Amino acid sequence: MSLSREVKLKKDIQSPRHEALLNIARTAGFLEKKSQTFFGQFDMTEAQYNVLIVLKLEGRSLTQVEIGERLISSRANITALIDRLEAKGYVERKDAAKDRRFYEIHLTKTGRQILDKVEKVYLEQVEALMAALSLTECQTISRALEKLRDSLRKIQAGGKV
Image (cartoon, rainbow, N blue to C red; front, side):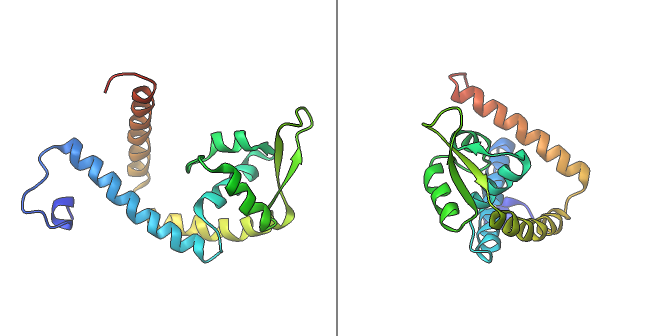
């Protein structure tokens, strides 16, 4: 269904670029709600999951700064995020060997266990959710969004719109 019909507009959106932007925003909103429901059943947020998966995929401890640089979600409140994960026993902070001003964040055994449990179900949900699109369509969407993010980074760095 077109976005115009979905939101019951009397007229179609005239600009294809504007329509694409609105489609991205609307879809992101749906995905955010789905994410909250999914991760909520594990007493976790998407941001917390992202920290755990970053640590798992990296295969070693990382500083809070390094985790923030790798996160898919906002890194604005990384300290509070790590605090919550530490309180649950999923990660632990240790003084960085090379620089005691920093902490290295380690995935604990408990963190690995919950991650293994959540990740399996999560990947099944992703496959089910994205099954409406072919693999080629998924790749096309990924490449288009990468181009858009590259453009946004240039603008953020002082380039022109």
